[in-house]
Length: 312
Ligand code: NDP
Image 1 (tube, rainbow, N blue to C red):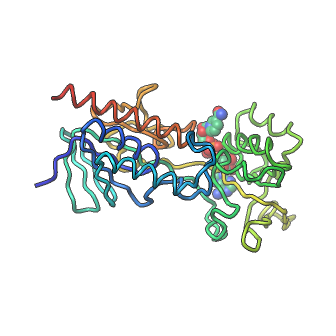
Image 2 (image 1 turned 135 degrees about the horizontal axis):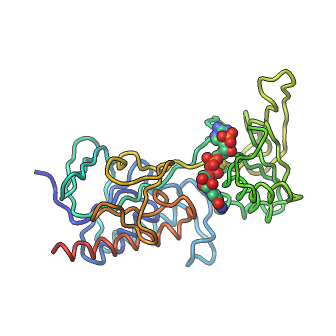
Image 3 (image 1 turned 180 degrees about the horizontal axis):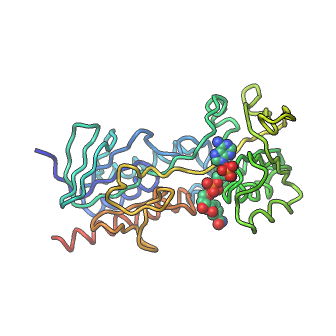
């Protein structure tokens, strides 16, 4: 016999935990599965200073611990496990955890987040939280008047380079091609910003530094006759080469855009499937902030409550 739930939340970032807080307080007896990285992306950042309510700032891990405890205080059942199969062909929806536990749920809140893409260099792991970041808005503040590099040539990279240029003394934008893929206006902003130096046709091969990032080794025009090794001194290394929403397992049942972000009705976490909601970064290519994710988790729980009321 599979367990029957009224509300299943998948994912343990700000969206998932906030959904759990609201759903528990609404007596939906939510069960939340944490996934592979309990606490989500925020646990990989160091300090969080832009989440309202923390005037002195906090750490990503502390913030997620607090949200988790708050959800547990109201009775949310938080479990460790990964969703390995989903069947939304009929209600209640069937979800399998870790290939063995079968659940049936009336409502499903997908809050599985997105994962920043990395280059795949061992140094990215080595200096994780010590100069390597995939979120300028989260970590840029720590590089005031310092020198940083941003990798990527799309809109995100240009936006992050511009944001960082407002704080840092100098920003290198490391672009692997000889052009920027970003929209024209974003390109112009970057190219006209005196603090940003665009290194076209450069690829990063490693990072240097004792305990924290102090430099990056690059190759210019890799594989060409005039290939050249370049070293830059930097204090921070920001990845902006795209995000991958963690939506693969839900794709047969919900609509996604070409990148994989779950499509919801404008201004709402409702997917096209009744009782299935998507909150946080898995459905948000634009803002990707803890506070916006938390807000959409709240909306999802309220929507789940209203949906259940129509059923009952
Ligand atoms: P994109 O996929 O548009 O761009 C990724 C960039 O990273 C490209 O320049 C790509 O290079 C580069 N890249 C990818 N892999 C590597 C690698 N291994 N090494 C070096 N460089 C690499 O992602 P974005 O996150 O920039 O944007 C995603 C979507 O969100 C886009 O549709 C964008 O328009 C949108 N967006 C819009 C904004 C706005 O309008 N304000 C702000 C932010 C995003 P290459 O070009 O060589 O493939």
